[in-house]
Image 1 (cartoon, rainbow, N blue to C red):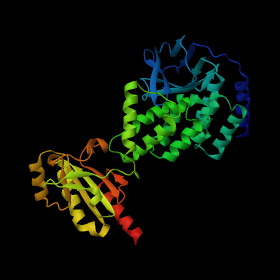
Image 2 (image 1 turned 45 degrees about the vertical axis):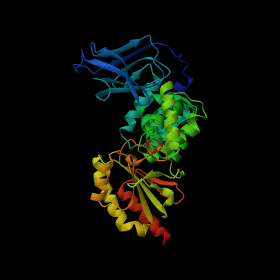
Image 3 (image 1 turned 60 degrees about the vertical axis):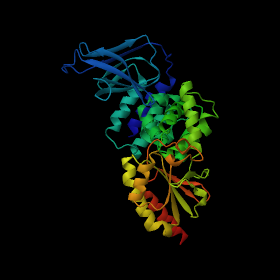
Image 4 (image 1 turned 180 degrees about the vertical axis):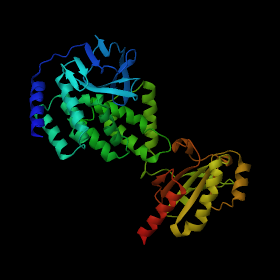
Amino acid sequence: MMKKAIFIIIICMGLSTAAFAQKKGYDIKVQFETGTSLDGTTCYLTGFYGDEVNILDSVRIKKGIARFKKSALLPDGYYEIGIKGYSKTTLSCIVVEKNRKFLISNDTIINSIENQIYRNFLLYKSTISNSSDEMNTYVNALQSTSPNSLVCKYIGLENFGLDSCDSSETRYLRQPEFNQLISTKLMSGDIAAIDQTLNRFGGASEISQYYLGKMMKYYNMDNNAPYDEVLVHLYDNYYVPNNLHLFSETYERTLRKAVERKRRVLIGTEIPALEAPNAEGKRESTKDLQRKFTVIWFWDSDCEDCQVETPELHKFYVENSETYDFDVFAYCLNDDVERWKKFTQEWGLTWTNTCSGTGDSNYDFIDYFNLVTTPGCVLIDENNKIIMRQFTLEQLENFFQNNYQNRE
């Protein structure tokens, strides 16, 4: 282990003092073993940026050599060389930073110190468990001798994970393992984990802006109440304060409207009382229901799911409304009054029944609650504050059971 560490230090000293000027073009050769019969096969150079995977160059193997040579800029980053494109056969993983002209031959890299270091790391990694004491010692030796080199930053990421990253290093965007690790945190729906990650890299950094663009679309979903809170949080705390404009003008307007629509139905938000006429034309209101909780049930008499779930909810209501001190305000979105009456009578619905076909409601429920599918449901307390949205009957029952136990 001591010999290995000394070798690492020597080779990293060469890396840290190397004065290669970054050139625009690149010339990378891959020499294959004699007798592999790969001549004529297409070889690909694949690059990464966030969750994007791009084939940047392709060549035919001639006389056992694949030579990637262009005058175009090859940005610093992690690349893979393989046959039949990415996700097929990866032949070599490389890190481009100091030198863009080198030869890969088996486990030897000629004219690229950083890639010899990376190749040695991969070989050592294949013989020892990741993040073991020996591996940690190995990686720490690398990082202590050349902490600012890209290859050592990438190796640290692969061994120690996201928390070891240099927060000022934007070139992690070109490392696929970084994308996997950071996406796991940012797409988790956990606001605390998201804040910790974005604040680590800075809300206005290239990394944060890239993933904010992804998250603003990912969390902009309908009928997913937990995601509504995340979207509004990201918009209010990162998107607006940093004056970001990551989308087209059309999508920016759509996003702004979506955020405002979701903001008004966040958990804990007080909503206006709902009013709508019943079968006799009398106006019913949620403010008249004298219960601790009210389930607002939006359904459509033509909706097959509604025809299954409405009787199931009513059965639960009949059996448990007194125990759990809740009521139901049902509003049918279909204007076919006769069909609505037929079902309410057939199912014996004894809760508060209202319908859009019997007269106007006091505001547009469909727009306000962003009802894109039916049935839709909202649970509110006696102060008209939202407790849950778009829940299953099982989730409703679990809530009441837990609440009832807490009251006991």
